[in-house]
Amino acid sequence: MKITIEPYSGGTFTASNDAEHIGEVIKLFKGLLVSCGYRPKTVDGYVFRDDAQRSQVKTWIKDKTIPHLLFSGNAGIGKTTLAKLLFNELEVNDLDILEINASRTNSVDDVRDKIVNFVQMIPFGNFKVCLL
Image 1 (spheres, rainbow, N blue to C red):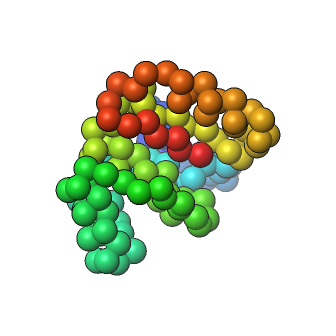
Image 2: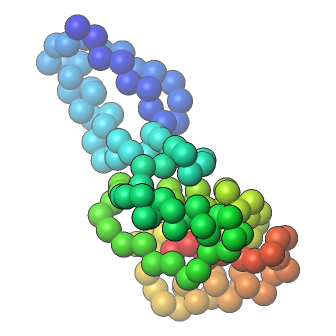
């Protein structure tokens, strides 16, 4: 039996089913989330919790507006994916999106400075978005 892995960054890795190669596979996957390999670009590719959530998101897209949103939950459940999907569907320019990894940039002053500098720039579209 052979194991073939195609990492999100590209390339492939093939290993036989023996102890030496299984160790290599474990090292390759250590610390990686499996969900990182798939990020849909449209509403049709996203797996919603229920039909009510799907309907709400489609309404935001149809109305070309999104309210202030707070997504919460465990890693890998689709919070960032849904946010990026909304940006894509609403055709928000990449230069109008400020993405801050709040787990790394966790100083209030650092986050405030980044947001203040970002909002002072002229928008390329109808609105600017901060994704923490």
